[in-house]
Length: 556
Image: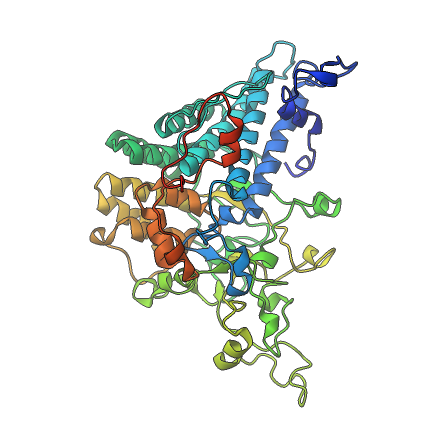
């Protein structure tokens, strides 16, 4: 998909605005030409271009949106010097907050595009090379629509189900229940499965395992709502299809272009350039997100990962340490900082002794002098020596500028990244949308909810054994907190942490935010319980024909 990913089918995007005009005044004038769904699509290739737009939009949202990475949860927040950008001051978080509207709008834009693809693909005037190709296009659209509705259900609960292209304004949408929304998402994904390939030579395209993964996740989410063991069992069944189907497997041995480098491990290999895709030999990759340096140079402005700039600490505050080199993770400016839970609690030696995921080459906690002009009286004499902790503390001044470097989010070998604006700020490696490790943890949770904690422990230990952990979890130790801890160890900045926490129901999300939040004000400002985000106030206001009820806890 790399040769096509920057092609944006702008004409198709105009469909989002059809029917939004007033019926009176100059807007009633009949235009000489007008792009509509009836005249804009004339070939199967054009329909596929709209799909490519969906892939591109998914990439941009997944890799750049901070809340998608868990910002404001138990794992990430703003450092103290950026406190004004925190997403955890609940005296200011309400249904008018733009974050909620951004998520709600994104998923409905995906749904609108998916509905357009499905309708156009079913029209007789569109010629297709084969029925299989037409079915594959529809399957991809249903995948994105199912994924979007399932995500909306996790975040917002029941939402209006829009299943066709709207040709006129509508102001009386009615919310389905959360259960019905999950069921619709599941139906779309189940319909997509037969027409999705097991593998594809085109990196980044959806495959069958991706739909099966989300079916496992959404059946698990549905079971939490219904309390039905049959839903949890269906979650296990679909996870089995992915894990035991013979296509995907955990990477347990060194692999890829840099596999012969000493003092590294397979966990480190998983996040190296040219190692992410299934077609790179990474059998753990179920679905990947594509980036492209050539597209970025051509001013695509989206085909990159901004992780080094956003996630890396600002170590340049320490005298004698340059803040823009490979050994400090790149040009970090500390937009997002790990909480103490993420930095320390989950790596308690009693649980994580010998855990490769916490090895120094994977989470770099040791800071070394690297400035050849320092100290002034003997330039370069300290290069390579460890910076004393008291010097770090004095430089940081409790502002949160200094924290560990997570090597999965940066590189020690900036190449193309040295070219262009803000060098050493971006990555041009592909990214995981789904990694098999997450499917394994979904199956572990489903087994736990079925009361089979031994099977849950066995699944968790698949990952702990791969990480060479000395300690393996027993059946009696498995609970939701342990599963969430293991997800944080394995999937930090990969999973959509907000969706994980909110789909748990009850007070799981607020309890963990209160317990592990980065800043003390969270415990005092979060004075109410919630297990769903609020429906954006703008959505409620615009739906003038029917009242859309607000989610519990947000009518304050």
